[in-house]
Length: 284
Image 1 (cartoon, rainbow, N blue to C red):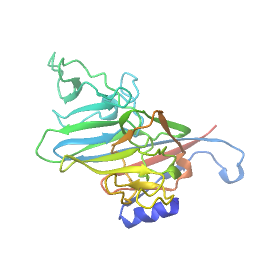
Image 2 (cartoon, rainbow, N blue to C red):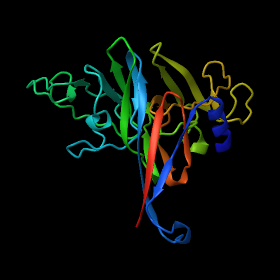
Image 3 (cartoon, rainbow, N blue to C red):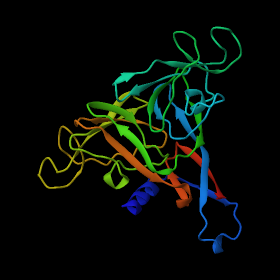
């Protein structure tokens, strides 16, 4: 199935960016018993349309105060007046807003960063791995923001998908994947997917997961049109972009991934998501 996925991505004329490994241990060919620890760091560029866009945090970043994935760590610099807020899938509520300013609004000191839009205090928002958020480009033209950080790795990278309604999420790892059981995505009957179109500012491509074709009854699991029952292309969200998943079941779900950068020789990514990864392996 993964081979089929790669072929489809290639057909979409996406960019292939090399994952470059630098191994610092000598004599690797004769030291198969050694264990190597790999850190992968890189960046993701995303172009923002005027108005609201929905993005996702997919890299690990730490700010100057040691806070992991604070809003200042995830997006350390952008156009003044840019604002954002996130959706909490557990409580089904929106967070307080944050705005990027070049100066502290209370003191006037030249301290660029994210501030509370009401109080002017430094924003305490964090953007966890796989969490989606709305970001508003208040200018009339497109501009690019850059995420910089470490690529998540491990055997149990878990993202909760809470029951009882919508969650704004993305893959924890910056990969363009089909939302499919073969990629460990936890589908349940009646689950719906919804994408936000940043140009029209409308929700599009709403599809529902069903374990059987609703028109024929054949046991063909997949994503279907909720109104007509027509089989639809499986969602394959871009890197750095989040989407809504409605978990209408009574149980919380977890999307658990296993990812190790040293296992990948390349990442195939969508044209608008420029991702560069550097890998350094250190002998333990």
